[in-house]
Image (tube, rainbow, N blue to C red; front, top):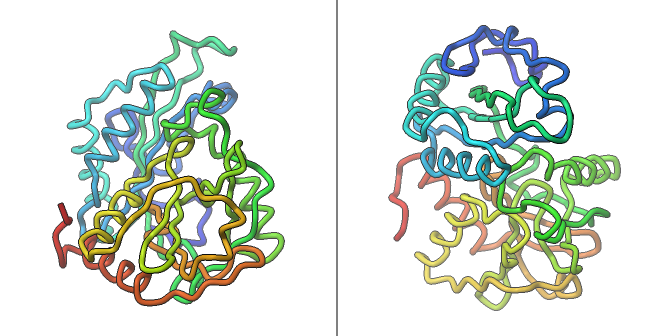
Length: 296
């Protein structure tokens, strides 16, 4: 597989697409694909460690659920997707890798209405190291201009491509200002998440995390909760207001790409990754690398 710096459209290898392996450079869709024009696509981001995709089946099940929320059915069962991911990972020759499954409406109909479009599915695997260059010392974040929408205005329970437009805008703005990421509020002004990861805060021995009522309850987020509880750390899921940000001692974000990443700064507020964050980073690494079992 090509180096991380290679353009994603110009790499060696194969991508699984609609039931067969296609040379990487030949996996193309038409410019009038509905998923491009109207964001009718859903996806999953997954990581493989030591040749095994972490929580693979849960990701495949969520992909199916996301598609149903967007009003279409993926023409491959969860079991078939699981088998295809295993084959694609093996064909990549990679032991540790990022896995991207994506489903979308095709190009038979062009317009807001596209009930008869073919549903496609593709799975790609590539090498991807740490999501953040300075992960271990903690990343610096800023405040996002854009907010997570009201669930009555967007399908927030789906991992849908369209929901990430404001995330891209927010992360681009953060990086222009020298930050690694941005903290997004929700439409009510409550603390929500980072642009592609959930967020946790430590105060007085307890972890506090926003209630995921307008953003994804991430699989890594759920794993972090289990790991914390296994260490007898209290986890409090609640509404967190932005004026509380200065009252926390530690902070970290969670996601498939981010894994568990310490945060040292959010705008004017500073945090110091300490015992709780360091323990959970270690536990997560041990878990995904098969050195410990998933806590109950």
